[in-house]
Image (spheres, rainbow, N blue to C red):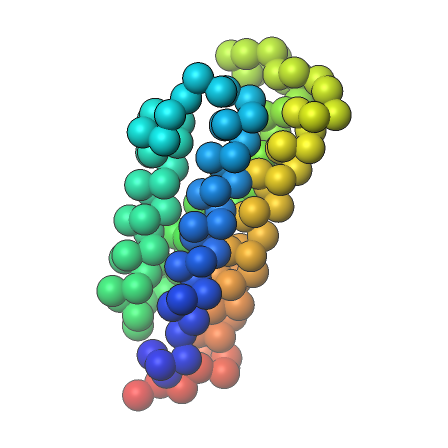
Length: 131
């Protein structure tokens, strides 16, 4: 049922996920502003994905895209702290830096949980009523 969709919760989870990126960037890249591409582009992507999810309530793919984008950020939150040769930069290896990456990754979890639960409910045999 469309009325059972957690629109305010999903909106809050999207904002929280973006805030994780923003707070990380404030700590690690203090010269950035709110409108810097490193902050505004992820926010714009989250906004577009949320709006598509909201406006197309009967479709599974917008939920899958939210889940995918949250997963990219979760993995990115961990992978970009590692000193990997494939990265074009050498990440700081300090407890402070790790803590901000854990925060960045953790802020994705609520979004991932909501999107995963929504996808499971919308599966055939799930608890969502089809009208």
